[in-house]
Length: 179
Image (tube, rainbow, N blue to C red; front, side, top):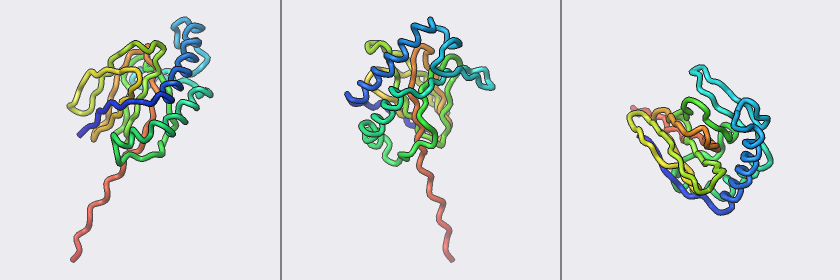
């Protein structure tokens, strides 16, 4: 079983996205496209040789995530009623430079794209078990992804995403028969 849902954002959240995008665009210009010379984050290489650039938290990023919890959280709750509020990990803003990003089956991943150009669309490659789809990432929307198996996603290196992992509700233990 899997969940792949697109939900809309709010105007106040989109406003925060634009603030973060402006800051990233400024750093993109300084770094001239190289992720290795940027000073606003760190390039991490996985054991499978995937590369993820993780941005350092900034005041704009913190404001974006506050806005998520104050104005967008209710929309996510409608999409996934049983999802846990408290993320087990801090929200992460990243660029997937090479490889795929994995979301464990214990989490519901909420992905919002940070568009430096609000008229652009890009694709997200989603795999959850046997389910595989190329879907659109659009401005003013977020993807809510989860599955009984891990979720594997691929996106263009030119797209920055904000990832929030919410804990999935634990299934209640089976009842013991009484004798």
